[in-house]
Length: 235
Image 1 (cartoon, rainbow, N blue to C red):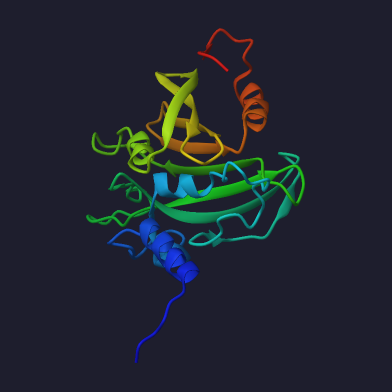
Image 2: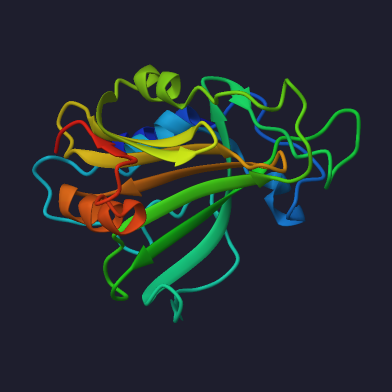
């Protein structure tokens, strides 16, 4: 029996196929529900958040929800004074996959880690920030403490990046902000932070912003740019 697939269905299947890796699934992931999530390329995921240049739409709490395991609905957080939604996503970076830390999973062969993902906004309609982060507890080996190739993953999907600001965090760590652009899409902003604490803990976070205003609102609050440790290249 021959099955006819219309153009829109074909496009949807191709889109999902581009996001999924060939080794899509793993086991024993924390949380357990993330075990069946496909492993997405970071650059492909970021590109889905880039809105068409002619569109008047904006991010909302159902934006790009496919392949994300949500652990809550939209809730008001008193500490941030924002509406938020939390979940988990599996990511790879130009093929590199972050493994679960040895503290939580002492197995010799550790599975690919799940990343926390958070949407936040000042109202229930709009999302002004998407945060993707992971924290490795315990002491790190030389192979764990590496620079994740996030930029390579972006360029793999034809996303151009322009560094706009560097902020020193101390202990040799820093955050770098980028303006991301690609053909026929609106620019978005990325703040990348990979920091190793004094106890050997590694925290990794990527903050995405839909426009320059939302990025600057967060950046000035995050960095306190009156300090000499802020080194802004240009805005």
